Image 1 (tube, helix red, strand yellow):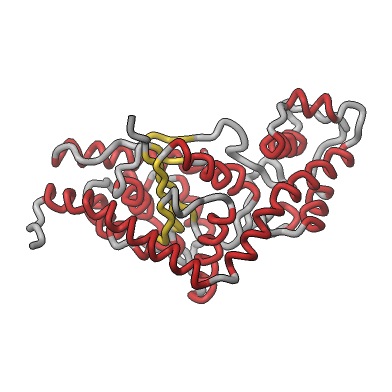
Image 2 (image 1 turned 60 degrees about the horizontal axis):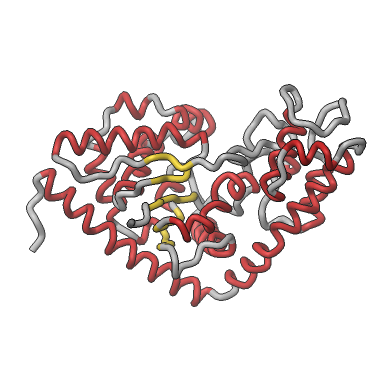
Length: 331
């Protein structure tokens, strides 16, 4: 039986957070043995908000190296930089013409980002869910690992695929979400009702996976909890629930096992244990990233070969889409 194909991309917005890692990137490595995997750094998406060009280039290379450090094997998977593969932008236009204005205007992320970037509400910000659909459909992906905040965009991609197939004949696979059972959403250490974000103004709210051990432990020690001093998972204990989710995701222990482990111990002991465990877990990633980012020639070889593979793969599907909508075939 043929393996199903998984596609996923991540924006080059600087170092990944612990939330990016637990909710998405950590799962990508193990998927390579069970599925055909295509991963990319989505730099086209990044410019929907203002970027400093030199910083974007650095962040894109860093993100590429980080994916490799997190276990993406370029021999097993296709790993590339989005802007290096022209089929994404080409298919984006065709799919945009099969997408309704009303559908895009209902996207909650557009509404949120428009508020945060009120000085630059550009058309790319409005239409980028179509580009996300093109990213997925250019490879006829069966599955897309998504966090809960991206489910609406994947649903739009499904609708676009179905509409295109009905209008022009079957071509696109209608993708399904792939959602990890635990750790899909890591919350802020300072406001545990909000998602962890590197854009948080409070530096103690977010763990970056390249943070050193002392920084990670210090941030966890400062994590907001509650006044009960009981390590257990239940409603109303958002801070402790978040720390237990993180600890469970890294150790594989159940919430009941964690409760037993810290029975009779204070929150200080628990926070220190979470910090040390997370820091030790991330140490090999930091070391491998440091090695890779020094070898620019090797990175260039990997992303060039990755783009060539992605271009060949996607070109077959996008050429069929061109033909179906009525474009004259190239010689």
